[in-house]
Amino acid sequence: MTVDSLRRLLAPESVAVIGASRRRGMVGRAILDNVRDAGYPGRVYAVNPRARQVNGEHCLASAAELPSDVDLAVIAVPAEVVPGVAEQCGQRGVGALIVITTGLGIAAEADLLATCRRHGMRLVGPGSFGVAVPSIGLDATGTARHPVPGTVGLAAQPGDMGLAVAGRLSRLGIGISSFAAVGDKLDVSCNDLLGWWEQDGRTRLAVLCTESFGNPRKFARTVRRAGARMPVLAVQSGYQAAVAGRQDLFRQAGVVVVPGVGELAETVALIATQPLPAGKTVAIVTNAGSAGRVAADACARNGLTLYEPRGLTRRRLHALIPETGAVDGLIDTTAAVPADRFRRVLELVAADEDVHAVIALALPTAATGDLVTVIRQAPMPVPLTAVLLDQDEQVRLLPGSDGRERVPAYADPAGAAAAVARAAAYGAWRARQRGAAPRFGDIETEHARTVIQRFLRHAPDGGWLPADRVASLLSYYGIAITPPECEPGTELTIQITVDDVFGPVIVSEPGGAGATAACPVRLAPLTAADADKVIQSEWTAVVPRGAQDGAVRDLVAVRELLLRAGQLAYDLPEITDLRLGGIHTGPDGAFVADACVRAAGRHGKDAFLQGLSGRPAYGLLQRQLHQREGACSAKVRL
View 1 (cartoon, one colour):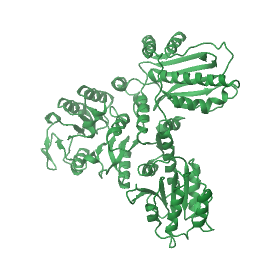
View 2 (cartoon, rainbow, N blue to C red):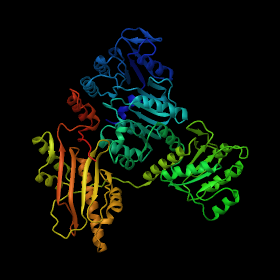
View 3 (cartoon, one colour):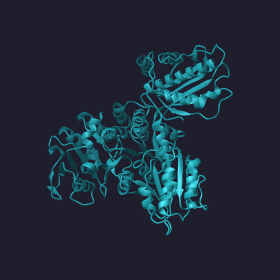
View 4 (cartoon, helix red, strand yellow):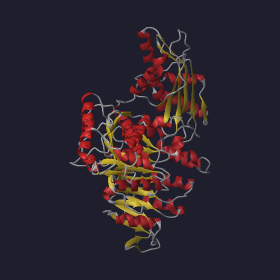
């Protein structure tokens, strides 16, 4: 499905609410009232077979009476009639459905999805809390307060968390570009929404509050592409944290992970309003020394480096700060320094090219005057955060001056430090030249796919491929299984398995005397920069000690083998495990002494369907969803 297919969902010119009750407090009635009250300018239709009107709105008896050009229908009817209502919508040419109803059952869900596919309708839900696009006045949710227009695209599962986040970002003044409570995600997922936000012209930052993300391969590809253009934040759930190595995979994909809604608001407040830090060096300027030391400790815990003034800057700071203050690591102006001098210290520190961000920590006193205004108005060439020790709110935005961005202000130094660290990590990821995964001219993907398909025809439940088929499969990707007849060089093992969020991942295991216990985990396919980083950081230590030409030759051979193996695993989604062992390098390149490959058969599960596997009609829905996004692998083994 293309991004254009979401237009009738997220930019509709007409909306129908099916199940619009006359009784206040019912979901359908709340959604109808919100669509009207939020100022939606398009045509609105109410459907209720037992009412002629709802709150002055004329009612149609059924979805079959809708005009033929309705863009979006919100369905809030009993579960047993949802499939029939969806079919009526499809026959009337409705472009998209939001199904609020829960408890359909697996067979009804399969019927619902099949109906949407047959009629070309996009589907949010079932079990959705609705969709909101504040910039066009659309609030098709049951929220008590309309979200404020803004720049954050928000996807949520469960929807109540999404409404809470939307409310918090609205109160913060950042607002929402569009919000979708994706529910059971039979169709529209985070992948689709990321694609929409990339091109909608409003979204500057994406937030994912979901327990899963849809098709893993598509998510990994989409989130890396989107993250190169705008920050993508994810609220961590127990589901996401359950697998070892998951945090590193999120970092590799450029996703900023936060542990909860409070930390999300703190991080969004900084990333949405300030430029990204160009590095990890932070200057802390404070008039409250003890609180400043708390902030310094928090910076250290988050991997930030504390700024140490040198040379002329150091001498100028000494001239501004009393002897009872400090300029060593923590810049303590003391409580006696007036506001104008505090501002001069801020400007002096921010002008130092060694400083990548400034935390201004202030406790207003009778001697200092209005430090908040000083912080707001100081011209800052680097990101600025404030910590106001007398502030009640966890985080708020101070209005900027002279067209400057707003300044995030925190009540807790630890919150400010963590937000700066996350912004710096994302900035570093974005600054790296990632490039595309290279393709080798001799790779024959279709021939390799034929090997897998022939195996699965004889072993429909999947399993480990015989040795001859493994050799044939690898040969189509330029990987030869050859016993090491030459003198052993760098000995390595490459293990490729499948993560249920990101798809295929590479676990590299250096061998030999120089090996360590740590096994780096990398997303597949690898870019050239990814492969170089793996080799430089993990395998240089086990390159054989000898001629420089030989060492370079070994690294080049290993690099190419990594790239080829990662591409194979990514191209063939049926592969769930691939191990290349006894890898040696010699004069003629890299050799694989032994290899094994496992493929998933027809009963292999999509990760986001695993929770449904015990239900009677699981296979029916699985087939419907596999038609949408392609089969996935079995459970992750990291």
